[in-house]
Amino acid sequence: MERAKAIIRDADLVVSFSGAGLSQESGIPTFRDADGIWTTVDPFKMASADGFAADPEGVIDWYDERRRFIAGKDPNPAHRALAVAPSMVHITQNIDHLLERAGVGDVVHLHGVIDRDHCHDRCGHEEAVDPSAPPGLRPCPRCGALMRPSIVWFGEPLPQREWFRAQAAIAAADAIIVVGTSGEVYPAAGLIDLARDYGAKMIVVNPEETPAGRAADVDIRGLAGEVVPELLSVRTP
Ligand code: APR
Image: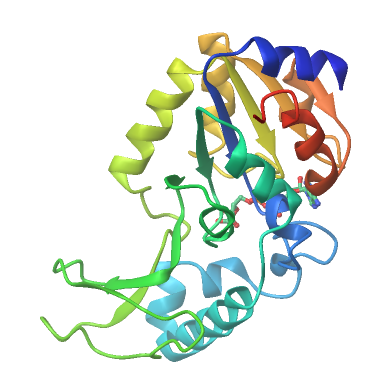
């Protein structure tokens, strides 16, 4: 931890790159842990365009159940520590808004967010939805195709603007904190390789060993809610 704190202390720009593990202590299950979401639901049935075509109502019902569940969760100490640390850029694979609710003004969401829908035929129509009372399966009011969550499904491209912003942040970063991700899903996980190519110092926070951890300057075994506040204490005003 002391080596990691020294890296954070000496860095100008620190970037956080997070996954589901960041929100795990807020009560939101991860995807690939033993009790993860993908251990009970087939990701290609529920998080792909083919799955949506096969069972649009089932997919929307599942996402709306997740939206209502996530809407009731609160930020944990890791979200709050990331929010108060100055001059950081926050990139996340998470669709929740717990970083924003902890006070982060601008989060780069690579995999979308739970409170927006868009036309599946991409006619351009999109709408904000209330995740605590989602509207269910419905036609696009502009073109009649189906509306679906603005969440990136397997096989779909990342939102270009967010993807470019993430790469630019990694290129400029002096240090990157990789917290709560298995680093298994590309292209997002490619940011870890990019950080190494650009020479950013990398600190991994994860209770498990991961490929990112093996390549990191410092691999901290632990829970985000415990490690991140201590790690960022050297940077918090
Ligand atoms: N603190 C830190 N890390 C944790 C914690 C915690 N409290 N609890 C679990 N973890 C770690 C796990 O050890 C694991 O390495 O978080 C990681 C979660 O990995 P995944 O479940 O694979 O989630 P993630 O990496 O975010 O998945 C990436 O895959 O299914 C897609 O779109 C989905 O954005 C998601 C992407």
